[in-house]
Image (cartoon, rainbow, N blue to C red):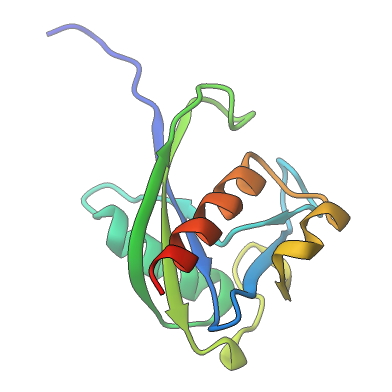
Length: 140
């Protein structure tokens, strides 16, 4: 059997409310330390991307979420400076009143689409956020 290099797999979660405000976390670690990002992280071996999304949301935001929709898969080889990483993005709902930065999240806050130009966003998450907003609004 040939020896293949395999990209890493992550899940990102767009947690939003009825007014389409959403949660971002400020990263505690490199890459993109102190930049805002969607909650998310690496899928563990033997774990589904859905389970990873729910786990990562809880670990980084302290929120139990219900996944609403698979938005897209983002796979540009250079999207993460650590190496080729493929992410699966989901929209989700959860009680945003319970949010608290946890795990590798330095800070947590609620944002609107209008605030995207005012903050420094990690990775390709601005593109993912815009796609998630479209999907969430279309699901109304």
